[in-house]
Image 1 (cartoon, rainbow, N blue to C red):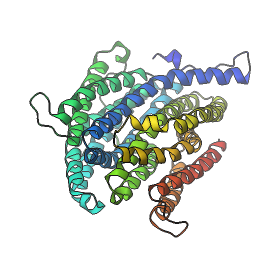
Image 2: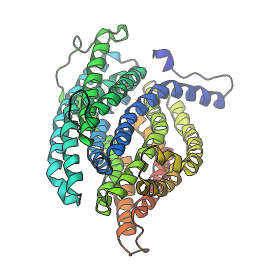
Image 3: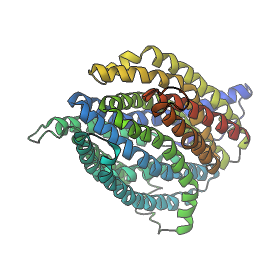
Image 4: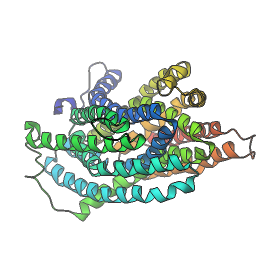
Length: 458
């Protein structure tokens, strides 16, 4: 993607509405490849879930629990490193190209430290699994899955840091291609490791971890090779433009990125903690919850990709000194997001049984998942609006207050309410797994209202 697809704003002859359409077109050019990349990355989780689910319910539950442990940790570090995108996009908008590679190297140093921390955290989670009330077989599979997955963590965070450079420059097709390749690698590797092909033993759910680690490693090597050889990156050469660690620049990124990472962790860990709370209810309930979470995560990729493109564009416009256009784009994109949500709701409501049937043939698991997906359909409007608002705020580099809003909405409201509705008779007779999903609706509505109000300040 060249600079003409991240252009300086002009005043079209059609007035404000024409300008909104022009900016939406730019969002589409930025966000289209991001959407494909996000779907490709999500495909790995969908492939793992489907293939493990057809192996056994225990393996599906174990992969679900394992994913619930590593996903929040990964997204925390992903959020920290995502400070690179608006920073580099802002430098591009202001014409300060000489600052791009030094800040990229500081992101790579942060990625290296993050990989060490993430591996340590995931390996230390193994001994805690029996405390979650898991069945012994499920706990053993989860432990093996995490032990295999961590081998791919350095490659995964390297890709994330390099994405800060490519996305920040507006070249969003790079991560799209890398993510598609990783997904293509993951499918046959899953088949080989889960079912024991090419002379290997059948690893079951543990094989998902090995397949993911290998596919991430191959994708990282391909991305490095491309950046080293592509003519588009001759002005941004990693080795030729090497920069020493700079604590001031690292601090600059951490001040922006830590609240983003914490916000992502708060939201995603809420889903993870719900899965852990539901573990004592049995593998069937956990498996049903995991299926619904996968479906919701897939459809969430469109508003998430729109939000990521909005962050890039708002930061570019602010760097270019056009705050009025940034404000117009941020507010008008909320209407675009609302339209997406109004399409999603009936699609999920009326297609629940068909979607769930793609994941499992177990009748009990399908019944649980079909019921829970009803709640997932209902909260689409609040979910789509809150991610759009918080993405615009990140483009403005406003990350601390949104973090407090997320903490209040999810940890302060959603989780306590969900626990009360699920396991106690304090408010109503205990609802089981439905209670947590009902609480999710309340938490997302709270977050959406507060974040939109915050965005309107700009």
